Image (tube, rainbow, N blue to C red; front, side, top):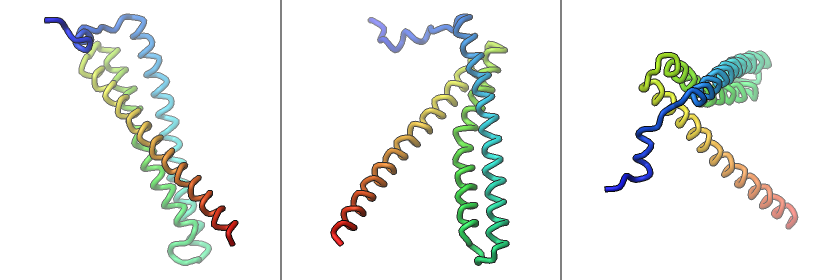
Length: 147
C-alpha cells in the first residue's frame, strides 16, 4: 500500500540550517513578546491614570475617563493572549533547540499555531467590523441626504 503525502512528514528532520533559522526566530519572538508585555504594562498604567483623572473631575462614578480606562484594561487583557502565546513559542523553541527535546519542539509549534489562529480570527472579526462601519456610514449619509 502506498503512503499518503501527509505520512511522509513523519520522518521530517530539522537540519543545522533550519535550526539556525528557528533559533533566530525564537530570539526575535522573545524580543517582540517582551515589547508586547511592556506595551501591556503601559496600557494598564494609562487605564489607572484615566481612572484617577476621571474620578478627580467629579463627573460621577463612571465618567468618560473611567469608560476609557475600562476599555484600556480590556484591551490590555485581550492583547495579553497573543503576546503570551508568542512568548511561550519562543521559550519552548529555545528549550527544544538547546536540548534536542522533541516534546518542546512540538509544544512550540502548537503555541505558534495558536498565536496565528488568534491573529487570523481577530483579523476576520476586524474586517467584519470595518465592513459594518462602512455600511453604517453609507446608510447614515443616505438618510441625511433625504432630510
